Image (tube, rainbow, N blue to C red; front, side, top):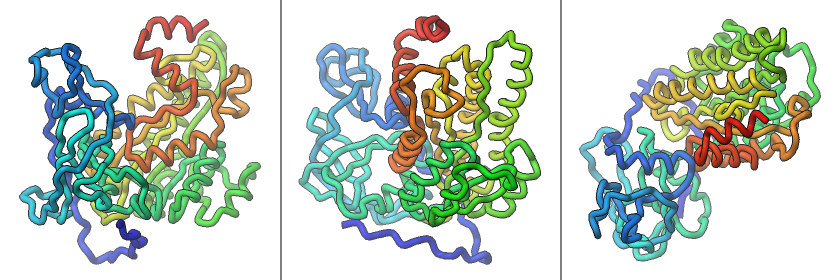
Length: 413
């Protein structure tokens, strides 16, 4: 049975900060098929197109018929923990600091046997459920969990290495005037966050949800103007060393077409608020988060970007939104590489049109900010990198994978 993880202790300012270490990161090109599935929270392994047998670990030829047609497909994740061992000594620097470490052999119901990291509530000889998780190096590993939920199972120390559960963490939301930021504050408080800092620009100017935010236990409103370099730097100097998870909700939505007279100004404002605002946040907060990646069980864990799904396929009616978020998506890939040095995860949450005033003219279905907020919390708990929220987001990603040219033509009509 998992023991409840105690809250974070006050850090000794005289103690040396541990350097972030990463698990082994060498993978074959074929193994990156597992990384794709793990990043999206799916369980997929190779299955031979010739003899229909499942194969693991990833390889270039089927071990049964030697066919080279081995696509990654959704697979049953159930199995039996055939053998369990607890490693007490390791020659690897990352694992040496985290001993003892449980590992075992799982016989999958679909055939292969896999070596997996094992949750502390799993029992040898009993059924388990496998999942693909991204370790701190950003690569996929097998993890065995109990079939049924157990008390405090999210506090298992090995599981916390794979996830970024908000419980007992201090979190910064960059824009509290945004309805998504307000919904996130509520969801994170319900998820057990220790402190939720909510950034608000122009604090002298009231907004409708301000009082309800102030009444939430654990929420602290802080001054943050992402278009102002000094404002971002001042806040980082004040709370930068406390932030375990940063949620970037920066947005600037102005409908219009490319030939409109004001489009250039709208685009400049959108890029300043989103792309350059994200860069200001990254420059001020990311280096400290990287350094705190090994700061105990409550160290820096994740960075979240809230993006429009139209970053993947341009919606002409919201052209400036699509372009600015596409730039932010590219920036997030760059930032993920930098954050990986400290084992800090980066989650991109893609959403369709929100049920807010700026998307009033778009037809339904629309996404409630609370649904998006709950999906972000779930993604953090699962330790994934990409989450697509709502019918529109999932439809666009599916059509993009099937025929990107058809989607380009249809979305512009």
